[in-house]
Length: 238
Length: 156
Image 1 (spheres, rainbow over the protein chains, first blue to last red):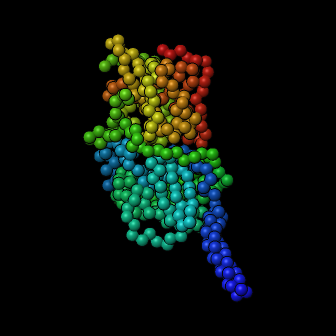
Image 2: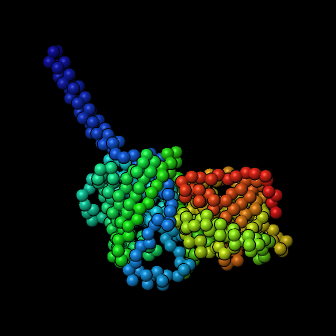
Image 3: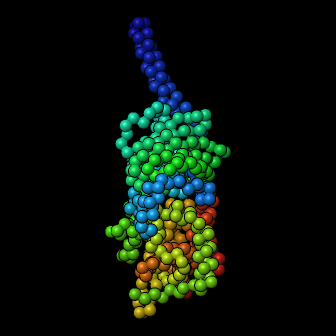
């Protein structure tokens, strides 16, 4: 009887220790995240200031391509295609950040909530398939999140042209106040840009804003015409 | 197809267009998902009629206004506005538009002459005024501007 009690006790102890260890593993991960700068509360609206935005310096070939592009030619947006990177971070729509173990997700009201995945703690990109928002890896440099992005879909626009698949972006994202966020970005692309395009954007936090669904295809009347030029469907509703 | 809209005076038109352009600067290009090249932004046009319906859908809200034409009939004008999320964040809710109400709208008309355009400003039957330019400007500055209500303006 005494031996049986000891065995039961040991079993209970082992079970409790295993549960505690598992719980500790889970909470450890979240405790780490909770210690990071608070990017996640509320949503971020860009302080839109076009004058502060430097113009990209284009290659001769890119300049020629832009000159030859019809003025009325529509971009991807009118076709409900994603903006991709870096446009995903620049449309002026508010953004939300979500941290989880090993990843940061960035979403905006635009782009059909196409989620940008930023993998934390990864040392290299590997060999990812091209994606509209590319493949992003990140690490913390103090309180600044440093993000490196490659493998962006060749069709994703850059400076008004299809990027062609050779875009590389390095971003530094940090809080500059309780409700202020700074995003510095350097975009490189030898096909489009004669020199790296560096710019800084700032955002203000709206703590009570919620992400809103935005499915572009549900009511798009702006599909371009057969030539790719701007067009609008004015068929009245029934 | 004939139009019954009135064109604002050149002086007012230029001033209004300049104001609208200044208010919007390029934010509208940033916030829009397409070029808006189909609209004639060289002048504003005012139309008055009855609010037929509102398509509160993505990527852009469409306001439909039935306007009497010169042939004794009527045309349904399609007016493109901002995205639902933008409108909400500017304080312009879908419930502000009530089908059947009289409405006066300032628009950038279609370049191709069809009955439609880009929604700029509106005065609703209860006097509520909507100014997309001011709302976008306030939105871009991080705030929001809700529609204002003052003395009702008779629909023309």
